[in-house]
Length: 218
Image (cartoon, rainbow, N blue to C red; front, side, top):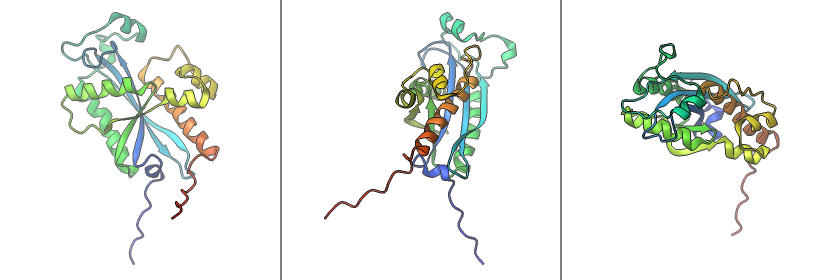
């Protein structure tokens, strides 16, 4: 008696083999090549047996500024992060990113996907900082697609008519605390809830799976 081949995870069929992973970074400026990456959070997503996208584990790392990094005081005031606070338990970029990337690679494999795709609110910002830091740290096994992203600012503009995370969450019925915002974990989890809500709403409205393509007439 032979074992029946196991069906691939349903999430592997939703985004053409990509596993969406929500990322938020807190930084000491806007320039990924010059300004320090200070904090990174990654929220894993999964899909239940009924095909609904749900939030999974959150992974967070505090990051030491790389050697020679610029620290804009206005950015530090905005995030409230003191880069030199020993209670942050910050680690070098290589160690921190390796700790973030490892569970992502495992999730890609367990969901039968071929690569992770970064989901972020204004995703280009987070994507650029993650890739710049990975390059500095000489990390070869970056699980993320090198240029594709899912941007919840764009998706929220479509779904709810608003591109600001706090306001989009409010319209979507997702509780949002401005006092807790600008922590990488909090913002990433709210972004994950927003992304899951939009994807699931599209399914609920009958938008996915799409109808089969009609065969073209001969």
